[in-house]
Image (cartoon, rainbow, N blue to C red; front, top):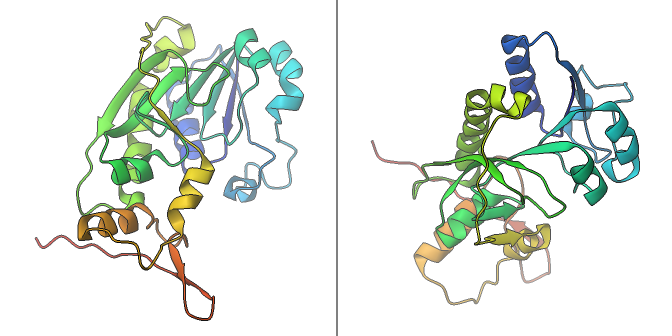
Length: 242
């Protein structure tokens, strides 16, 4: 059985590769590749200087010929209909479907105070959509920033994949579908959040939620313009008194 793992996230690539090694299913031939979109995974020693790029829109015919199962884990590509209908494609998504589909689910979970978690689902041609194999929530707290929740979700993804590993490989799982299609957030929705209007009338809760949703480690997300039109970046530090 030939399996392709497509990932643009170094941390999750390392974790899922380790899991495959630990399970040691001798009948599996596993390839690890990534998107043509530049990310930190290009610099990892397993990929640096090697031609391990897959463009799913261009290469779908080749993928149909060569693989029995494709696993997408933080792959920054939308799979074409021809691919998802021709071979079993599984997505590991950092959001709780059907609530948090699309880009940066933890950001919008903070903004809209919705549940957040991880989902494993069969893929169709829609974004983060298709029958759900498993999904579980993670906790979120008022003192969380985006990266705190994100790291919690990443751990839950691996936990779920480990739990359902054999049923995913053997195609013995049972899926669930939901009539509620949830809300899909696109990258432009996130970009719209980043610019702060200094004269906007909001509550302290809304301000804090927006800033912590846009605070993700060293990333420069939230900003406003000063009197001279210069962009000023804003982040927030939250510390629980223990």
